[in-house]
Image 1 (cartoon, rainbow, N blue to C red):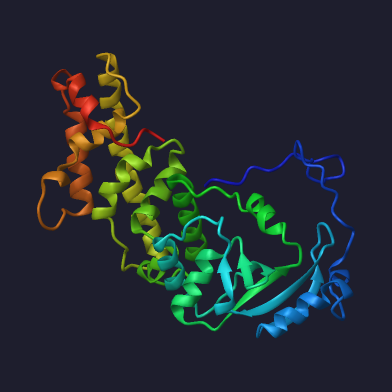
Image 2: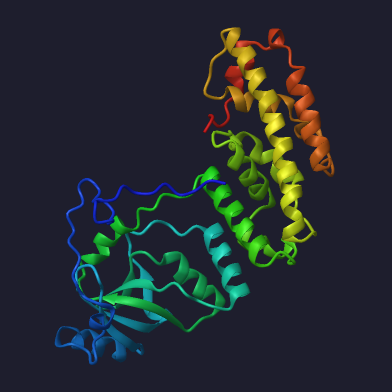
Length: 324
């Protein structure tokens, strides 16, 4: 099972500083971060929050720079995204609303800046939209007094979107942990947490082969892979078996790719081309075949592919996604 890579440490056991990082955090302890009363520099901001119908829940200092902040509940209709924030993704909002609907909780405060006409959030457009769609009246926010932080927050919000491999590995690690903690629950009960059943199979496969080109197989897997009605404890073996089928297919595809390369055919889309060529789903109407049947058919076709019948024009027309 994959493990996180540890950072180098100093002789004292502390992690070594990363190149280019000069920050020296404050020495404030947890109890020193709390204000017993709202400090003078935040009183006007607190007054404006209350005047807008909000409520100040706490005042505190953040631990790195010791800057004073307010934790507040704000009226949803008084908060809007900053104009320079990325456009809201409907798919992301749908995912958030479904998660909130299931958990019945909102646990991720936004950052908010006070402006003349209300509040602006530089990093919470999706959460704000989801709460508005659900009909919530309030939103929890860390209210920052400095307007320039609305721009600086963009530098803090740089976590790259998960690629398929990262997402699948995250899912499989979650699967293993849940199977350890609650092995009697059905796999199908965790559809929200796992997002897609194909991610589970891909995750188990990525554990065994980190350089698997999962993106080439994901479209086909999405059509034939489903959540198991067995328990998580029993599902481990079945997911390992399905991952084995996928790796067997990948081995056959890899051999076909090498044969094409030997004929002088080169392209970043070569593997995707082979997978598309052997995938029978594009010609099928109605319900797709079972998981095993599809992968066995594709594996057989990959092993029997005749590179002499492939022309460079065929490859040029294929396009598709390059290998990961």
